[in-house]
Length: 126
Image (cartoon, rainbow, N blue to C red; front, side, top):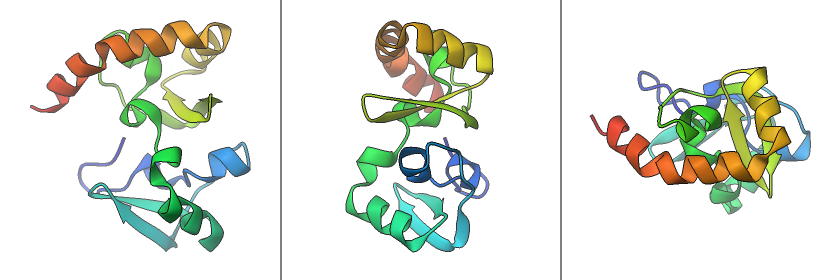
C-alpha cells in the first residue's frame, strides 16, 4: 500500500521495525529507500540496510492492502498500525476486529485472500 500522490509506502512506517520491534514504528525521511517505484522510510540506518539486503522479506503481503478486505475481493488500504506477522510475513488490517478474526484462523484468511488476489489486482489496474 502506497500513497499514489507521494509514492510513500506504509504511511511512512518502517517495514523492518515490525519484525525487529514487534511494533509499528514511524520511519524517518533521513533513512529513505526506493524499491518498486515507491519510497520506504526507516527508523534507523540498520533497518534500511536490512531492507536493502532483502526487501521481499519486509514488504507486506498482498501489497499492504487490508487482508480481510482482499479475502472479500476488495482493495481496501491496510492500516499500518493494525498488523500481524504470520510465517515471517507482514499483513495489515483495516480494523482491530479483522485482525482478531485473522488471529483466530490465519490460514483460512490467507487462503481466501490468495484466491481473490488476482481479481483485486485487476481492480487496481484501472
